[in-house]
Every structure is written in structure tokens, then in C-alpha cells.
Image (cartoon, rainbow, N blue to C red; front, side, top):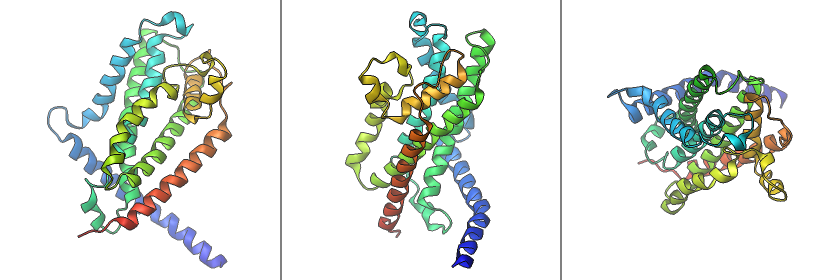
Length: 267
């Protein structure tokens, strides 16, 4: 039995480079299919989230009094740019299988690979847009250099993890189900007011704050803001709760993908 476990672990490690190459190839295919080489081509990967985040930051540029010592533009950039990653990954997972079914003829390509490739592509564009806009805020003096940059990175990883887990669930349950597909886009808009992307948890009065913290999303944005701004704290962040929620979501996501894989019949 021990030999079997060792063999499986060895096979898993040996298979990782191959899995990485498959996902890399899927990312390049998705990049070319979505943006092509016309106009600015692949740069649209950065251009789309960049434009959205700039517009939102400008709309919130007049709220200085409510934010204390944090510049409203920098506050909006940190919140909305990262939220775009969640929205983009989840929205792109809807209908992902229908448009990529022919790829499943290749033995090494799986439903999981297709979903992960799309999620990584969305994350890359969003993180580049965040880097550009936050650097701009630094240059023009809207904010100081992040006091805890590691927490920005951890917070972004948590948001990506949650986005990927939710997208795995959606990929599975929306396959051949047009009714559920209709709810995906509205759901991402409903998440905006309860995500914590545009407000600090400490601003929410009790008992609503306690209810809000059952959602791990606001805690992730609190963590990112703690990393980005000197005056923010980790008062409302529970790392163990966040990880537990993400593990449960991931389990449901993997079960969803496994179930849909059995329902797919290639002709």
C-alpha cells in the first residue's frame, strides 16, 4: 500500500509540468481567440480592466471626507480593480464548456484545465491593471508606498482562489442549463454591495457587520487594504475562517467539474 501511495505521488509530481504546458497552451489559444491581433491585440487584456477601473476611480474621486486619510482614488483602485478579477473570472466561466468542447477530444485537456486557463488569463489582466493604476497613484502622490505589500499579495491570492472555486461550480452547473446561465451576470452585480470592495467593514454598524462577516469576501478586501494603507487594520480578518470557506467552495467546485465531466458526450 505504501508503494502504491509513493507511486501515485511520483506520478502527480511528474505530471505537473505536462499539466502546466496544457494550461499554458489553453491560455495562448484563449488569448488569441478573444483578442486576436487587430488594433492593440493582446494589450486588450490590460486595456479592458484598466478602462473600467479608471472610470470607477474618477466617479469616487469626490469622497475624501468619508475616507479619512485615504485618498478616494487610491481606495477605489484597490477595491474595484481586484473586484474586477472576481467578476471577470466568474462571468467567463459561464458557457466555458460549450465554446471549448472540441478541445476535450485531446486526451490531456480536461474541464478543470479549461476553467483554470480562463481564470489565470483574467487574473493576469486584472493584476497588471492594478499594478499600473496603483503605481500611478504613487507617482502623483495619492498614496504612500504600501506598508505591508505581502498582505496585498495574500489578499489577491485569496480573491483569485475564491473566484476560481466559484467558477468551477458555475462551469459544472451551467452546462446545458440556459436558465442558470442567466443568473451568473446578475449574481456578480449583487456581490458588489456585500463584497467590501467599496467600503471598510468598520464603517458598517452592528448587527449588520456581524452578518456581513459571514461572507469571507469583505475580509479579503480588508486584508488587501491593510497591506496598501497605513491606517487600515486586520481587526475584522479571520484567516482560518477564510481558508475554511475557500476549501469548502473548492470541494464543491471539484465535485461540480467531476459531475459535468461524466455528462459530456463527444460526437
